[in-house]
Length: 117
Ligand SMILES: [Zn+2]
Image (cartoon, rainbow, N blue to C red):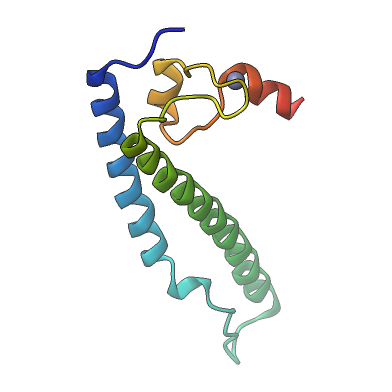
């Protein structure tokens, strides 16, 4: 398969850097809310459950963001090393369209769907 062009890599680098900033911002904004729920004395049972439910969603989102940030950082590292865009399973070049949608991805669509099956 065709290697990524310099122009494509440049576009994806910008995407990754924007994404990195976005994830870091998101994590810093939600940092305080990720602390254990402090229950107000006057809070009713229902609102406590709401609060705990909201927090579990928030924590799940934070974990997802954290792992995407980690992948984003390692993708940026790979760009430096010149190994970016290669599928970690079959080593084929991942198509640009897929990278444009998920610039931090490490697997081509074929390997990814095989793994998820
Ligand atoms: Zn593959």
